[in-house]
Image 1: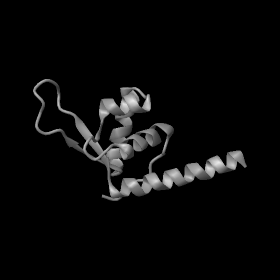
Image 2 (image 1 turned 45 degrees about the vertical axis):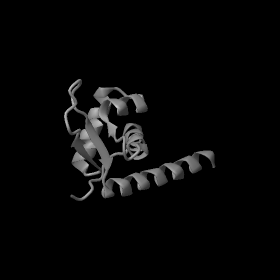
Image 3 (image 1 turned 180 degrees about the vertical axis):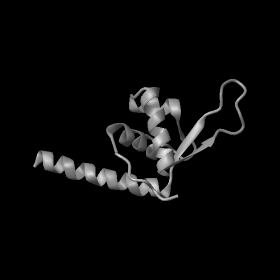
Amino acid sequence: MTATRIRVSMVVLDILDAIDSAPPGDPAWGLRLCEQTGHGSGTVYPALDKLLRAGWIDDRWEEPQPADRPRRRFYSLTDDGRAAYAEALAAREVRRAAWSG
């Protein structure tokens, strides 16, 4: 899948930051992303859907299903997503440098 150009809002950047910083053995999942970013589920989940459709992130379901709670949907950056994220971070640094200029 080819990465689609999407608007990298603060919400999207916050989500990508959180997914990228998740330890390999403890991947990012929906409610945790809400908690880490400070954005509500009505903001985070539509952004996750947009990132999935764009090919910037992958998802997988927790296996096996825990007996005491619903299973979690884990998210990780794709190669296209990692490249787009790096580009977004570089653009953010250019904007910050211009503001402090």
